[in-house]
Length: 104
Image (cartoon, rainbow, N blue to C red):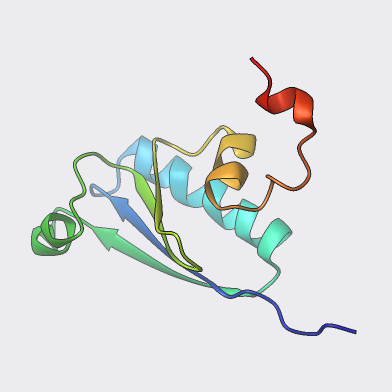
């Protein structure tokens, strides 16, 4: 039995305590607890107090979720309310999607 699991390292960039920032964090925590079950590390970065971190990571809008590990690095911009889009962006849903999803 394969006991190894990927560990996800995530950064959520927010701009203060705005409604979008609060909503994004709440939704993300819900997704992480349901889908990642403790195999993640999340760092919340307020770009108003740490603008240099946002600049270093080329963050142009908030909220932005950045998946650092496992590769590849992915970024999702917005309040994360589209659960399916978040899961696809984090490489969790691609195996579960049928071919019809990818057809034009």
